[in-house]
Structures are given as C-alpha cells and as structure tokens.
Image (cartoon, rainbow, N blue to C red):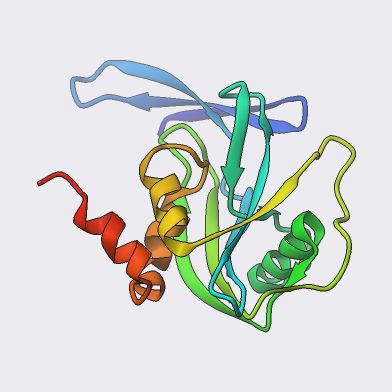
Length: 183
C-alpha cells in the first residue's frame, strides 16, 4: 500500500487506499471499516437443539434477513464478553458456555473482521435490549434449517454456520441437507 486517507460516512469508517498494482499502475480502493472494527456473532444453540436467530430488515439488500445474533465489540470488552452481551441484547438468550469458532473477513472491501462463537445451553432469561434502530424478531430453527438458510443465501452470516458445522453434524437434519449438495 502506498497511501491511505480516512474519513467517515455516518457511523461507518471509510478508508481510501492507494496501491501499486503488479503492472506498475496505481489503483485506489474504497474500503469500509478498518482493522479496529471488531465484531462478534453467535451460533446459539438451546438445550432443545434449536438455533436462535435474529431476523430484521437490512438496508443493503433491502429485505428482511436472518442473522446470527451479534454486533460490535465495545472498548475494554473481550470477544467472548461482547458475544454474550450481543446475544442477550438482541435475543434475550444467555449462554451456558461459549466456544470460540474462529474469525472471518466480511468481504474484500471491508477492513474489519467478525469473530464467531458457538453459544451452548442458551435459554431466554431477559427481554431484548435493542438499539433505537433495531427491530429484531427472534426465531428458533432446527440445525438442518440453519444450514439450509446459510446455503441458500437467506442469511447474512453463512461463514459462522460453516465454522459451527462440526458441532452441528450429529443432527440428522444437517446430514440430510449436506447429502443434497450438488456433486
């Protein structure tokens, strides 16, 4: 990278990055977020072996999307603390335990990343505590349906479901969905 110029659009950081390309030319790319943008999300499983999901309207695709509960990491919070807090705020569910699954980039033009957790033993223990612009409907689905949502583009966090797949494989619905994959 040769240079960088930072700014903001609303609450989003925007960075213009100039790079020298392999052919010697220079190209400028606009990236949203930066490395300090840390976010978390949970594949939240109840003792009944259902997955807890958040459903809300998203302005990018301009439709209601299914999502793994999650959000930003606040200053001074660990990733696990942020994951448990976001799960509780968005859904009212609290986990018995959190297992770190890994970290993924959103896309090629986002400078931050999202860390995923498997939240097990989740039970609803409080009311949602939503931000003013959040209107979340909480759903519980079978693990096979969770995998189907991820595979069909009906949700925003398919990567988190992929990271949780080893923990979901003992469910017959998941095995059925995976046997339907095209060869």
